[in-house]
Image 1 (cartoon, rainbow, N blue to C red):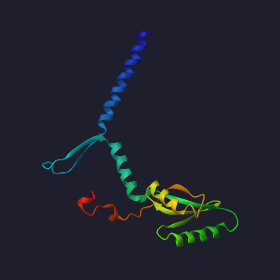
Image 2 (image 1 turned 30 degrees about the horizontal axis):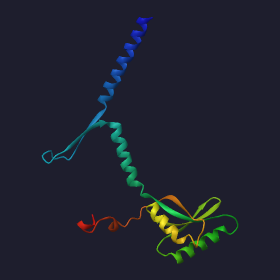
Image 3 (image 1 turned 45 degrees about the vertical axis):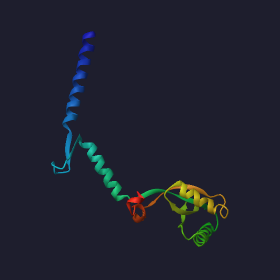
Length: 161
């Protein structure tokens, strides 16, 4: 019985070592920075990892959205809820022209949302401004299409860094 267990354990160890050897064979080698005199980086890794990284890069290039926050002003349902939602949207745009207002249909409700805020703090500050006129407003996480003013993101001089 002990000999049989020893033989099985040895077979498992040998197969494990064989699988490690095979996985080591399935590695690829990439060189970044073609001119070696200036320096280069050689990355050795599994082919599957590099394929996943390439898929991730491709997805990020195709999906042009960023996470952000909007303030939900109302969630309306029932008769004439669509008309009331669009009227509320127009009132919001007239009262606060610096932010965009949206009507989103989330069956069976028409939700009125305002703003394209990058941080929860920005949304909270605006929420404090409109809370008196629109009680019951809440901040919602959102993902919306990228509309970034890159001039705002890049420092104009060394002093801005």
